[in-house]
Image (cartoon, rainbow, N blue to C red; front, top):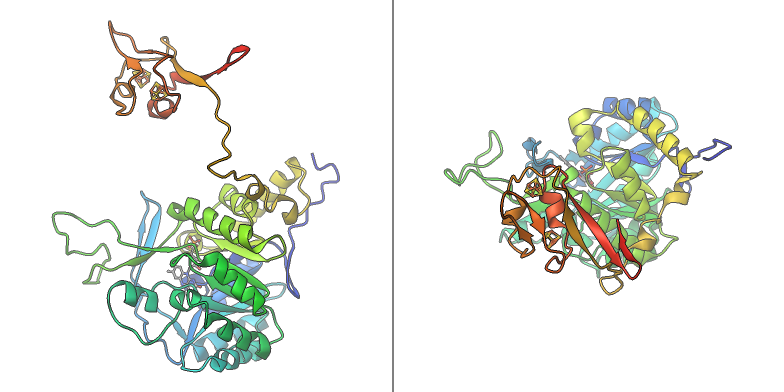
Length: 410
Ligand SMILES: Cc1cc2nc3c(=O)[nH]c(=O)nc-3n(C[C@H](O)[C@H](O)[C@H](O)COP(=O)(O)O)c2cc1C
Ligand code: SF4
Ligand code: SF4
């Protein structure tokens, strides 16, 4: 136990101290000052305000979302972006309304010159921003257009995040224009997450992170394949997928950034975080802080205080005093495919628990399971010890047995 009982959840992002690692990710739950106030009242450390695009967003629609709860997928294409003036008003109002809470506008400059990024960021600093976040992550802008064969002159969101030649021009322009920390949020789409993070940090960014979300095609009804999953929208589209479905991919995204950027980079992870388990896992693969969006869309903000209590209890029980004590624990121990230690063994069936339901008999890659005379038996010599049958069995009637030089070990 952490006997002193002192757990410090604060994290330091450049000159900014966050009271805990939980930031509301840019999205529809932080597009006005009332939402920001609610997040602050419920203990969140800050909010990345809904994306502002200047000049006027060239893609901005009334939102059409689907929360496919069985699959734990959130998906959307149509989304309302803010204008610079709308977002500036949110920042000003929020700044007057909340304390000890980081207000982080997220911006995209969509003019022809890169200096415009700095001019836009400066306006947000003057309005009271504690940090400025550059959106190099949205796959629903020019990345979507080029992915669906629509030509586009503009390189925005995820496309600019993948343009390693021009990316530093935008970042440097902002770093030179403001004194608050600059955060750059990337997309895993395009596969340059880690390299782009390095470019942004070298250009002076205080922190980098990733959106986690991927462009995908949602479930379609194969009897009416042209009907979109979205309500009150005509077309099937590539959509931005977020929510718990993303977790394994988002953990890998953070891991890759940490692996490549080293221990000193401040990294913000996101993708499917909704509880203690998914938050701690993100920190353990390398996140200093996390962005959460989808869960705030579905459940609002008021579940965070309970999560913070659970986090403190968990950290005490694990003897972690700070977020830094847990950060990278998993990251450091992720082995390469060459480094595996594989134990010899086989699967064994407990005849008292097995009901001969037959599910394990069907496993296509297995020659070891026999079912004669009303019993299920596994031949240890034919068993590859892959363990699929343990997962398939609905009765937990199968266990793996290790064969060692000293005999069998369970
Ligand atoms: C409806 C919706 C709108 C979003 N809008 C933005 C945005 O404007 N800017 C941005 O950087 N990320 C945006 N995101 C991405 C989220 O901030 C977050 O990084 C991503 O969804 C993964 O986290 P989650 O699974 O907790 O949602 C949006 C996500 C959703 C679902
Ligand atoms: S562990 Fe794999 S090979 Fe062995 S019995 Fe089970 S499914 Fe078959
Ligand atoms: S799946 Fe489990 S219960 Fe069913 S036959 Fe196999 S061991 Fe028995």
